[in-house]
Length: 265
Figure 1 (cartoon, rainbow, N blue to C red):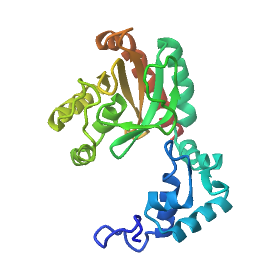
Figure 2 (cartoon, helix red, strand yellow):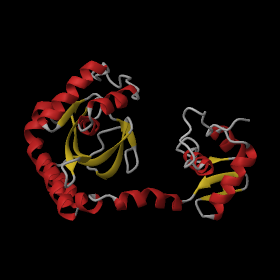
Figure 3 (cartoon, rainbow, N blue to C red):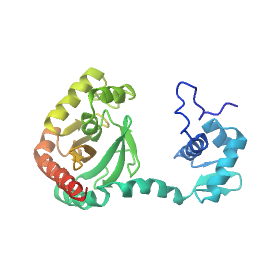
């Protein structure tokens, strides 16, 4: 069987590419909410590895404490969180943003999150929830499409034109609600507006009833490294009311975090 982690000659990254490491990561990624426990056969099928290859990787991960076995079933252990938290704790705003976000939530009584851009998606790195206003269970590490989220548009607005085109081309521009903007030209115009005004608001494009507004977090050089948002319920405040009530506190919080990041950097 040809293993899925193989690449053809045109895409092979070169001599520095460690294929066995890439295969190990593929095995880790094969576990998710729909496949929390898998047999050796399941892992081989999910990754395109041979059974022998999948077995070697699973046993290696087990010996390192990242995987445990219960009979024929393998599953990840809590130690796998070390890999994610190594990234989070290395971020300059990890322990700077959280108290500011907590203050913001206490002030506006709405949920607050921070995210970074990864390809065509945003990844949640901090979250201070209040009311449950979104049906998706969002937590640290959760991913959402960038094109139809306010944090995503703030982060996309920081890209140059070529990188923005690449991110939109890689996006699944599927309408999540009747309001979702899916036309690439219209999205680029919307993102250009975000770039000019320095913040974004998305009115029920990701989910019915959800309005979200975001501002950028910048490093010492002024580069956008993350986005900070407030999420509200359209039944409590419409987009115009939300902007009027929350924009100033949101921009102030993002500026506070940016200043702390700059001082630390």
